[in-house]
Image 1 (cartoon, helix red, strand yellow):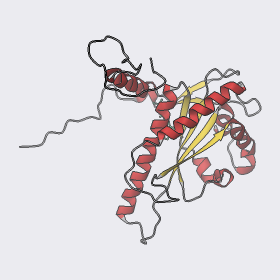
Image 2 (cartoon, rainbow, N blue to C red):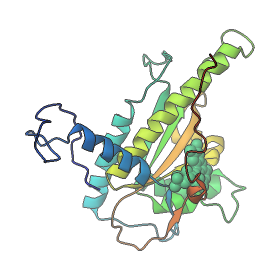
Image 3 (spheres, rainbow, N blue to C red):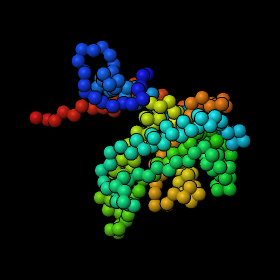
Image 4 (cartoon, rainbow, N blue to C red):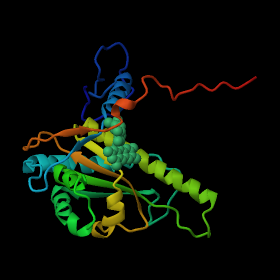
Length: 247
Ligand SMILES: Cc1cc2nc3c(=O)[nH]c(=O)nc-3n(C[C@H](O)[C@H](O)[C@H](O)COP(=O)(O)O)c2cc1C
């Protein structure tokens, strides 16, 4: 797959040339659609776990480059659509992103047994925190319950806040995929239930995604685990129906 560093659409010089690029070196419209389609199809869950005693290693250069790509992808993911102005802290967006670099992921892995006393021996969280290059948490902010009992309007607005946040998360995953950074979207229920205080995330926020990111060519060998539903997709678009209105 060929993905240029900068995907900008410029509708210039789209005429007879056979080149995939216009005179400015940017992708032509048809190739841009193909590139986006490829990235959507290439995105996949890839979990990498490491022994907390022997966490995954990268060179300082690899870490620095991976961190910069991830941070930029987080910023760009904020171009997701959102319906309602959440009006909190002067921000319209309903989502927030929290980022932990590798050092902080590994510190958190070390603290897990004391933070979660009933952590089950087979739980994957310590391994994931020890196997990643960084961790990004996307949370969303429910509407304050100012008007008394749950109103159906408030529920609908909250569904849309979550939907907007999920759009931002998918933007993030697609950018990571295009950049060659393996990723895994986990629900992170343990993070929500036990770790918000340690992470200094306000309890009014709700976790939508814990995205573990894996940088290219780690120095330690790693095992990559696929998502359990990857192969369960319908062979064709069985979930798509044309709607025909009766005369
Ligand atoms: C909202 C959401 C939460 C998820 N949480 C988990 C999770 O907690 N554990 C897990 O193994 N996979 C989780 N996944 C990843 C799915 O298992 C994965 O997307 C699915 O198996 C399809 O594989 P693919 O992503 O490679 O297409 C989650 C995905 C989404 C969208």
